[in-house]
Amino acid sequence: MKTIMTFLFAVVFASSASAAGIKVDYQVNNQTYEGYYISDNKDAPLVLLVHDWDGLTDYEVKRAEMLAKLGYTVFAADLFGQGVRPTEMVDKRQHTGALFKDRAKLRALMQGALDAAKEQGGDVTNAVSMGYCFGGAAVLEQARSGADLKGFVTFHGGLSTPEGQDYNKTQGNMLIMHGSADSNITLQDFADLASELEQQSVEHEMITYSGAPHAFTVFGSSRYRADADSKSWQRFVAFLATTLN
Image (cartoon, rainbow, N blue to C red; front, side, top):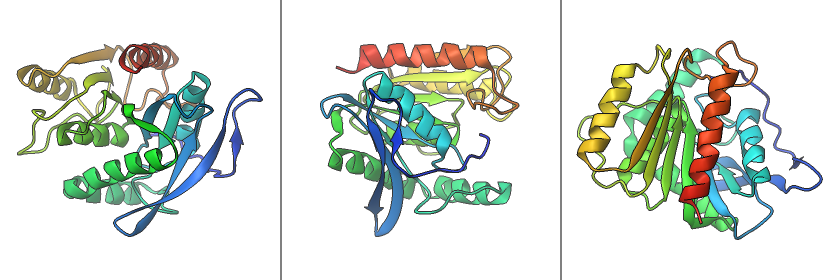
């Protein structure tokens, strides 16, 4: 779980040569959500980026800018709602727990974010979905729903499959990156997912990073591990290059 940073929705300039990111208000089931969109090429492949359990903050904006500099269009989704950026542990658990209890809503929110990306000009026919921690669990929910995307990627995400669900509808390739020292999501969870994906013949790659705890990619936090962050990001970038047109 990441260090809290104030999310400035003002236009962000990644560099003089890159695109400007914009706030995007969008509706899902009559509720307003606040996403973030960045692109300097309407024909670029799309990355749907899903936040951790404290909502869409500067962390996701930074990652979106990093991807935009590599030539991707990025839509950072909001799964909590306009102005909902929890800072207290009890609130984070409440918001994530509510969505884990209502999987239909979680799926609708993921689809709503894709629809919002499309409205901004994102190419949803040439897209990968990725997420961090809670966002990783949301991406796996999206994969199980049968969403027509080319890939699904998680960084230190929740890996368990709810009772009654499986991956028999999953269409895209999967990349799962996990810290071996993660005490929140265990290596048994990791192994169980590998078995499920193999049983369903889902194309996948799963990587563990030694000594990396939960949330190992979060800049500036006590859990940050530069080596695991660098290696996982490089693998992600390579996955995007081979998966998207």
